[in-house]
Length: 151
Ligand SMILES: [Zn+2]
Image (cartoon, rainbow, N blue to C red; front, side, top):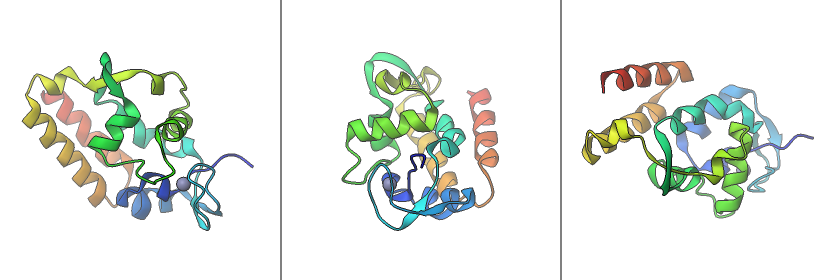
């Protein structure tokens, strides 16, 4: 049986209420956080969702890992069992990239140049849309692309 992740791994309302239910989950025990009788999907099904989050960071040797950014900026991977190694394993499986999770990142210069306030505003806006969204990922990533071009 392929490895599968669940909403509890992330402890995010948007993923739990909207994203994961829309991905035809099965039910069982999570391969990562070991929660029982939960909705399970294959990590790669979240690739587009997480690619959007990753796209606002850029490689920076003095930065932090993507998992650390996602824990602090997006309050993801908050399950007690999802320590850094386990969260990195899951993120690597989601992105199908074992290298990127070992690199350090910082918020993209495109946002930093606008100042921290701008960055925090964007983050809040993305998170809000994320949480409020009812349709599909393209709505969010589409609006996000427009935001990028304007900066
Ligand atoms: Zn889980």
